[in-house]
Length: 113
Image (cartoon, rainbow, N blue to C red):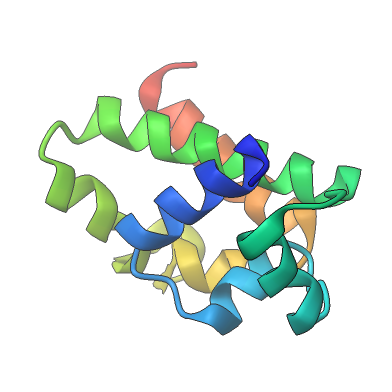
């Protein structure tokens, strides 16, 4: 399994993402493609790699901001005034790279980065 998918699945597990959420965050690959990636790997598109890179950065920033792992992992589901009382996960479910990047910008700013 490619490291990028392994890293993504680790976050998906910590954040308790549904299969549908995982597909959206990866850029909506076909279900069969997604399950092939999980099982045997394969070529991961640059778009999906970029998305996972942002998700990893979000996860790392949350670990720094919220040292309690449960608080850090639960943060993505909590309503946030900055996102008009939507959760970060709701924003990222928009499906575009920019939706994920918007959350990354927010946590990086909170972290002072």
